[in-house]
Length: 412
Image (cartoon, rainbow, N blue to C red; front, side, top):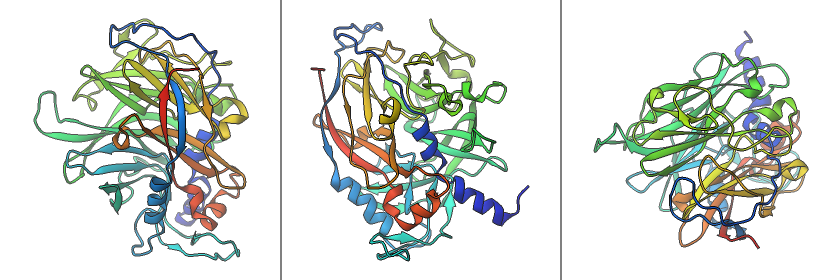
């Protein structure tokens, strides 16, 4: 086992793992399907939907820059990725991040002479964090990491979360947070081997961690690229929580990763026996999910994608196929969580800073959306892994979420 100093250096090198990992795990293109499908589950009428227009959300992006640059504390968030959000019953928004830099940010110029705010190379790096927002303003960082490592060389990345009854029918509410468990591995698993999906329970209003349970252990799946981690996004409908996930096919150079979906009755996310997985023909208990999108050759998604509802239509956002996946977001649509999925009907490329950088992890934030406007975040990271830690320290804006606002419309 490495000593603490060596372990710290290793974490600095691999600390932006989810970023680079999700850059490598890119979605592949699908053939455009004709609109007009009817919902196979008999729901509200389904129409083909895609991105009609979009624009940068400078105000929201600037708010994260303001909070990250605030040097009044030395134990709060200064940058992170894996951006997810959930609104709490008292109106606050809880933001969840994967690998996170804490510490203090210094104003420009930095030691390299560049006109960027910077952080010291010894700034603490933790595997996850949570930040609270009230009335559009970020206020505080919860003690980090919020979810402790389950074992040496194993860590937890929080993904989607939702507020639900403590148990079905209970008036008491809690926050359930989906967690991805990964462990250190050898190439090609330099950013961690997928291990399990867990669900954490946080109390309300105090957000105290009460418990963590494993809902799907994948350690017995011999091929790590076939292991499925759930929770990249959740959608609620008719008393069910639909939980989407993916595998890591791209880690072994397969052209595309597969999307999967499970469903859980409302109030039972933390009960492994309540989970049902789409097995290709029906919802069933047990750990044998089958893909709802992706054939391993020309169709598929990145391991981090987002799904929202627009009327009776499900709309999925992921990075585009091929080299465009470093800069371009694609959208797909379906009439049911289990598909069939159609697209991409339209792609767009949000702004990026200069240099060897990439966008990844497009995540929708319905809690900040409304009036026909949908807020979408994307994370930014340095591509060259051997110099990433240095670059992210020299320019703190490279490892913070950026936001766009978009409107959905029928494909043209």
